[in-house]
Image (cartoon, rainbow, N blue to C red):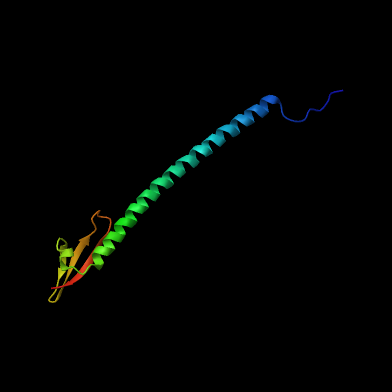
Length: 99
C-alpha cells in the first residue's frame, strides 16, 4: 500500500526562500535609492526657495536702479517693460517701469 505524500521537499522550500531573499534585497535597494533621491530633492527645493525669496525681495524693492541691468522688452510712451532675471536664472519676470 502506497502512502500519499503531501507537502514540499526541503529542496523546494530552499529554492523558495532563496527567491524571496533575492526579491527582498531588490526591494531594499530601491528603497535606499529612493531615500537618497528624496535627500537630493530636498536640497534643490531649499536652494530654489531661497532664490525665489531673494527674487521677490528684489522685485519689492523700490530702488529704480534694481532693474537697470534688465533687458528692455517693450517700450511705450509712458511705461516700459523690462525683462528681469533672478541671480541664479531660475526665475524670470517682466517689470513695468515708468519712463
